[in-house]
Each structure stands twice: as structure tokens, then as C-alpha cells.
Length: 200
View 1 (tube, rainbow, N blue to C red):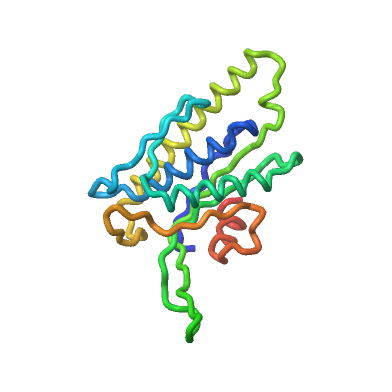
View 2 (cartoon, rainbow, N blue to C red):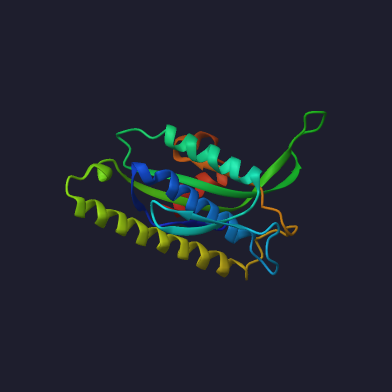
């Protein structure tokens, strides 16, 4: 498969931290992917996640922010008590030729990069009886989250030498979709192929 893909190591996370973790990782991916020879305009926003004592950058783009929030909320609504491992995929694409002709013709989406965020949901992590256990779990989560952010930075820096990233006008964000593991029926074939053969 020609579409570069990155699968982040599973992250152990309690239910109350899932939204903050997803926001942090998704916005880090989007921000790092936009970075290039020029600084993105408008200037990025620095976000402090007080619960996890972590800071990350996101694009100052209300449309992007709204899309991320909608997807994070939808992901959490699909979370069930029995779920242990869950995945969320950020897929970048460009528009190709139109799939059909006529008034209602729509351009094809040509996906050129996938990022998979893997979570190991610890349903009882927020209800640990011993306070020290809660503190240790939170410290481990913070450490692992920073590690995943470093992985994202490393992977996007390494991809600068590749030719798969299309050109981007300064100040814009690449078009992207966010898919859940519960939506696999609607995944593009290249993503299904990666998950089945390259990410197993």
C-alpha cells in the first residue's frame, strides 16, 4: 500500500481523561502536519490541559476545532462499559477527479496519510480506592501522553523528506476525516487493507 500510516502505541487511559487525551493527540497531529517552511497563520493557540498538566498546540481555526470536538464527543458516546481497546483514525486526503458526471458529481477523496490513536480504556482507573494509586496512574498517563506526542513530532519530521505530502497554502489545514473503529464499514479500502495486514 502506498499510503503512509502511523499507529501509536496503546495508551492506558481512564474514562474521565479520554476527551482530553484525544484532543491533545488529534490537535498535535493536525498542527504538526501543517508545520513546514513557514509558521502557520493565524498563529497557533497554546492549550494547557490542567487535568494532565500537559501543554499542546492547536491551529487557531474554529472549523477545525469544531470538527475535532464533534468527533471526540461522538467517540465518547459510542464507548461502552465492555470496551477495553478502542481506536480512532485521523485520515488526511486531497480531492481527486469527480466520481461521476452531472449536477451532483462529487470529487473523489484520495487519502494520503493515516494516523491511528489506540486507547486501552481502564474503566476503574478513576475509582481506585488508594489515593497513591490514583496519583501514580495519572503520572503514568501524563508520561505516556508526552511520549506519544514526541512520536507524532518525530514521525511528521521524518515525513518531510517524503514526497507523499501534497502542497498546502500557508495558514490552511489539510482536509481530514476522523473515523472510529465502530465505523469500519465506511472506511476506505486502503485503510481496511492497512488495519488488516499492516497494523495487525
